[in-house]
Structure formats: C-alpha cells, structure tokens
Amino acid sequence: MENMKAKILIVLVIVAVIANSCSKDQFSDKPVLTFSSVNATSFPQNSQLTFMLAFTFKTVALDTLFVSSYSLVSNCQNSTVNFKYKVPDFSSVKNQKGDLEVDYVVGGSLVTCSNNNDTAYFKFWVKDKNGNLSDTVRSPNIALLK
Image 1 (cartoon, helix red, strand yellow):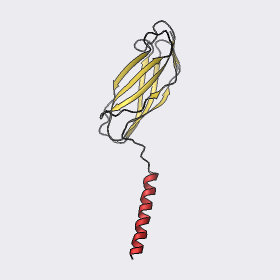
Image 2: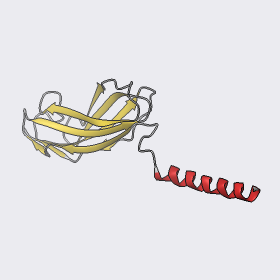
Image 3: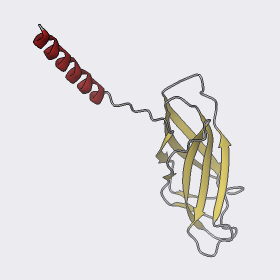
Image 4: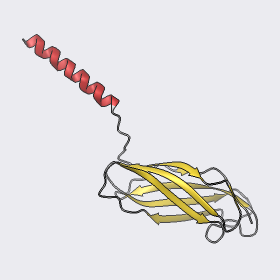
C-alpha cells in the first residue's frame, strides 16, 4: 500500500511539473512593451506619424509612456526630444494586454532639425504604477522632410 501511495505521489508531481511548464505565463511582473509598426518611414511636413506599440502587464497597471526622438543629422541643434504621456487607467483589469497608438503631426513639437531634412529614430518605454520600467523598444529610422 505504501508503495502504491509513493507511485501515485510521484505521478502527481510529474503531472504538476509538466502542467506548470506547459502553461508559461505570458504576463510578467514588469510591464512588457514591444514595437509593432509605424505607418511609413518618410514624412513631409504636416503629415501624421503613427506608431503602434503592444503592451502587457500582470497585476499593476501602466502609468506613463516615455518617448524620445534622436536625430541622426549631426548639425541639428536639438538632437534629442523627450515626451511623457499618462496612460489610461486599466487598474481594475489584471493580466492585461493591448495596444498603444502614438500619433504626431510632423512639424511643431516633432522638429529636431529646424531648417533641414532630418532622419531620426524613436525610443519608447513604459512605467507601471509601482515604478517598474519596461525594456526600451526602438523604431526604424524615420525621414522627416522640410
């Protein structure tokens, strides 16, 4: 009888280990951000630049989206422009995944080179309500035309 109990216990442990390893949690305690797409890679003045980002969080809702643009043109005065946005509150939902759309009109605040065409890339990261930061994701190079 003891031998049978030991075999059943071993089988249950093996089944539990296999079940646990097969159901890897896609949600992390730290927010996860991935770059999905951009609507083009070359933009004239007054056109709309749209980035799509995907996010997941396990238990703590997102708080802030950070965006930095980096000019690749050496004679530009402002080589980095930083933006900070509050994210809508999803705190009542756990294990959340979704998309963030970030829109800019080329010109105005999205100017890194005042008189010339520019090529820039953008970096994005999010912070959750506990202060945990996601990894930083990067866009492809974007041509901003005058």
